Image 1: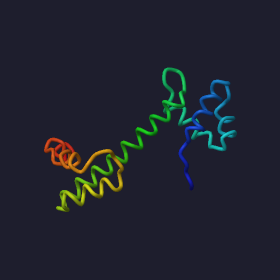
Image 2: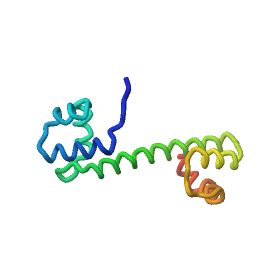
Image 3: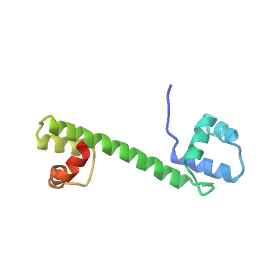
Image 4: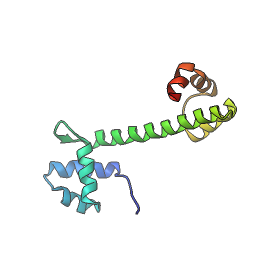
Length: 121
């Protein structure tokens, strides 16, 4: 199967259509999506009795950032434990995970014993 994430435009449509009183099935048909997909998205992002598209999109972006960050941190820690050089790990990290951090700040961040200990536990 080919799954696609709901875009910010679709989230805005969901928000507007809910305000107009459309049913979940009608929204799903209009967006050419499964009704369960729309229902699940509304349920996960229903805050204080209202679906807000911008909050739903922020939640999605934060989830993706957390997943990516966790993956790269685990990758780096495992490579340190496998005795790859610190420079190789930092280069890999900066190439595949674009940040504003410089080599030096990443090095201090990784070498911080409290941080590494928390990752390894």
